[in-house]
Image (cartoon, rainbow, N blue to C red):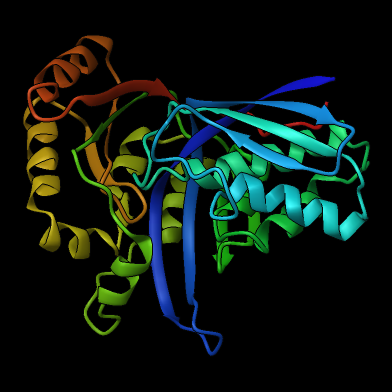
Length: 289
């Protein structure tokens, strides 16, 4: 038996860090939405008690470092599953890009194995398990648009953003999320206005969404990687309505309402980096069907 599962990327419309927690993690407040740029996973049922990761991308580990592998191990141990799986990952989402590619692969693995191994878990139960794997996994289990608090595991669903293009540009570098958080100075950050972004989504106000984009990690990454700042400048110059770095970076995204301007932004960016995508936001949450 085989299952195909899509694992869409996410962008942060808003990312705030409130304080360092006693457990060593940071308390965050993030508004995320999934976009139509996705990895594809093929899950093949094995009667043997084994887990295998297969990918032709040299940056994707095939062992316990892989979050999809960790998701499979977690389900096996928690529910005493004595069957196995081959997880083939076809990567489209850039690696180490601030787009939650690994987290989305893990979330897709949870959803897929729930069906393949007939575990009959609810979406909420899968999201709780996802929180044990990584900060973005709970959100990626649900998809859609949501406010994430705590370490990222406290999810409140929100309306989808107004329809627009999302132009993504990733420079030739990867960024360590842990390193960015280590460099973050909590006494010197400009906090985004999360409530205003929520109101913009609730009223489907594109201009207000653009006006309230914010990411406290952006300044940290821009200081270390000036090429990210250059991409931001170019994206604005070619006509994006609003521009922000996603997550810990280095991917920059621009929101663009009009098709002709989207083409201009994409064409202008291709001279600065080879990974440029124009995608739509995904309004719908995932289902367990």
